[in-house]
Image (cartoon, rainbow, N blue to C red):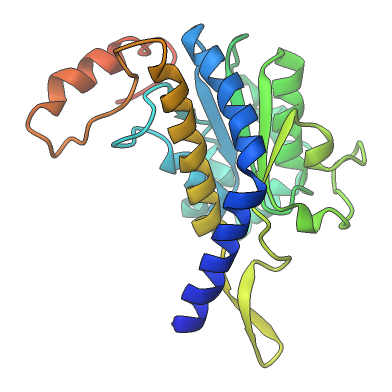
Length: 239
């Protein structure tokens, strides 16, 4: 256990230091778009979708956040099915009627490897719609060939890359030739929440009413959260 704590803390410190400028730049752009009525949409397949869900309807998090939920890409419908669909170059095209962007929206595409077709196709859709497209990925995979028909990898499509610096294979530890101790969820969630906190801080300089959820376990949260959600009910399904 101590080995994992040591290695994950080393990696988190590295990310905090090396991604500071990217977080700052991204947070400015996101805050400006949210102030203009945009929402933050997040997409990921398999375990990456857990991070898209992490930011949604989150106590202490932004209200205008929505995960792009295509169930055949999610683990609960079958791990192997999810993995196969992520690599299917036709999947997003067949389901794009479930995806909608408006001009001031922001799209964060979460994909540790940045090489599979589904996340890249979503990034292309965002670019075609004119929204700000950000990736959350590990650039340590960048020497691995992309599987998209265009030949491009995710970092070649998006506007800003937030680099998790997660090692190829995900595991921080090794034993008997195998990696273990996955890092992508821990680092991804930390990086994502650091970004969202920075966005909230920037919004706070121009308004007294912050679009932030209170915990449902606080006695004064219900009315506050209902007022917040009402503003975005036409764009985000909170039911």
